Amino acid sequence: MSAAIETNDVTPLQWIAVGLAAITGVIHLVLGVQFFPGAQPVSFLLAGLGFFGGIVLFLRNYRRQQLYVGGAGFTLLQIVLYLWLNQRVQPAISPIEAIDKAAQILLIASLVVLYQRGQ
Image (cartoon, rainbow, N blue to C red; front, side, top):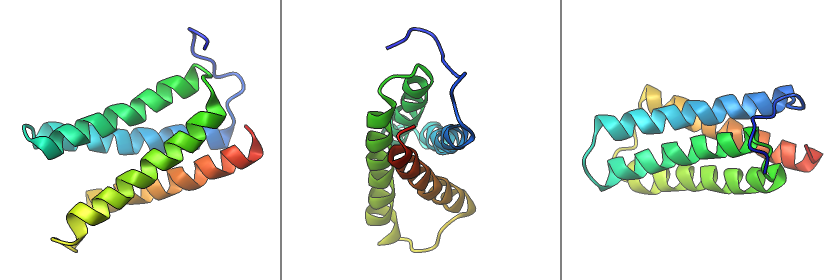
């Protein structure tokens, strides 16, 4: 792993994935801080840190192919947990939830394409 940030070879699709991960990461961190303390807010904080950790590893050019697979799985898990924990109780979706889930779906799609392209 390189100690420096490496962005010379980052493609537009990779930047889009970074942006989408940042969007969902910020949303999770804000919600975690807003509703802290408690188990669910801590899980939001950890998820937010996970998204930003992935961004840092990507920008340091650390095993990008594995990050795509792990990132897609991590993000899919976020969606499944959201549906399982929230939608059974409160099926209405807020604007922030819609933005977050749209960003996550687009992030998964981007990561799958990046993996398939071998970028």
